[in-house]
Image 1 (cartoon, rainbow, N blue to C red):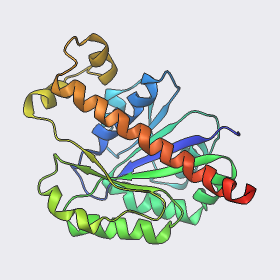
Image 2 (image 1 turned 90 degrees about the vertical axis):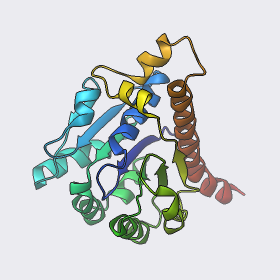
Image 3 (image 1 turned 180 degrees about the vertical axis):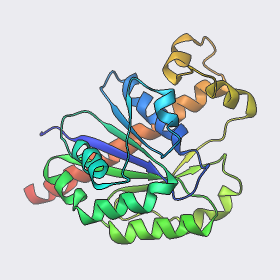
Length: 236
């Protein structure tokens, strides 16, 4: 089978929904499997992912055509290096406009690159509008709602984010209590460093990391099966 390169776009049109935390965990998910990974921090004036994982993350800008080309040219390369894009809310509309105008999704699939969106909702109307826009513009793009239970009143908005045609069922990231949350915010903290040094595998943060990594694995399998299934139908 021809190798496939996954590209995960972690995003929301709303701030403070846990986007960068999810991007951090996803990047380390690939590192935990000893796979190379390239992350891109698309957050003007606040490159938090670069600060957290500088060895694996590049700051990226799509404020002009040159920056757009530099980023999308890297995302469309089938080099068997998973990509993680931490896309800030301020760049949400511009990023997907460029993606549509350049035919990125079609070109990516032609080259064996598998793009997907991990979409973090919140109860605000802007989040519902953004999700509706993506599912309408990109019906063949896997879009997975990721409900972060740390977002206030997230439970009451689930019905507004039904499964996308290619994304499968939404997933949930559990909230962390204040103490483990403060731990992951410490300078130099990494999930891999934590799980490799911890002796209590029943701790809340260990269980959280394990659950989130299993969720990422399941989403990656969904993407692969989505590519295999059409081929199986043709063979049959």
